[in-house]
Length: 552
Image (tube, rainbow, N blue to C red):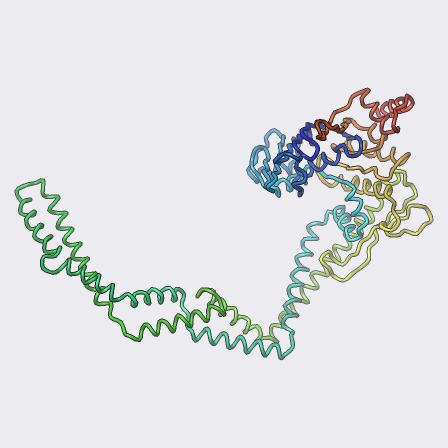
């Protein structure tokens, strides 16, 4: 669970440290005090996308730190796989958001990416806000709720793999079955290209060799002059080798009587042999500099051909040869058009059968899950003061799509005797809040996430329904940590931890303060939520009664 959160320079929050506890944690405060900023900060630490607008005016970066305790085994496993120690079941995550757009992220002191924060974060916290209510208004999202309840991800993955292969085969068939004139034109073009490249007999590295040979020919007179001078210096009268031979003879004779000259004698002998080798290399190089006057023209013509081919088929010899291979392969496919079409049609039939079989299994799973989900949600909604509601997971068959062959939409009849209609058409804001709470509560038992956050789940709710939502949140918090941003006294009074968020202006700047309320402070805050401009004694008494009834 999330035990503490530290926020620095995030929007109007200069610095705040929040301590969360087990059970139900409620956050209250005036509109605009900064409750949403706390949620934004938690989203940031969970790796969600952020904006530089989040950084407090006049500062260079925003910082968020979070401490989690009693983390689940799946988080421990993922941390271990990424070389992050978590021996004491304590996880510290932090994220620094800079104005230049760069992020610095760490988990237990180890630098990580934002995507790593997101991967770990989804195993730690589920955040449900008004956006979730909007997803209920999008029928295309309803199938994801059913699949989450069915826990059929492996079957979905197998189906989507088969469907993807089917689409690839169908696309290839479509591309092959073009009109005959286009096919003939393509054959003519490929044949010409293949013939041109094959006749050119391109060799890898050929162009570099030709350029080097061209440079040598163009500078051959200079090279011959250099080599002649070198050879004369080595071999002709008075040259280096004559001097070396003379020196070797004299040193060798001296060495016969003077031991200290033995090493020098051997070194000069070795030097003589090396110079003789150099002289031979120079002589051979001189002999190899003969060339035909027409060779330069041939090189120019070849380089020109390679340049023209490179503009059409690829910059390098490797790319041109790869183009040749691809052209041959494509021509083969077209040449064996009928055979390939038959092969693809057979493969299409096999993949279609496989996809249809998996889709049918997926449909049965969804139908069964839909019925169970409907019953479970109806039970939750009955507790949430919607006793006569009829909630139906409606399924209609469709053509094969990426999701299968099911079109799923939630239907609802809020009142007895009314025909169920699409949720998006008739549900009010308060009903949507309760339906989402019911769905999330049903799905909560299927994961190991330790913390659930509800951001203004009470939108459009009051009176008896508000009290039921409060009791449900309290009930959910018995099995996991729940953090709730609320404007309702009924929910605030049920909290095990009550956090109050306020703001003030000082020296022309806005500051947010977050405080954990106790005893009389809590009574005053709940009375404020219930009342208007002034808090009356009756409201204070009512607040005490609500807290007492909640066991607080």
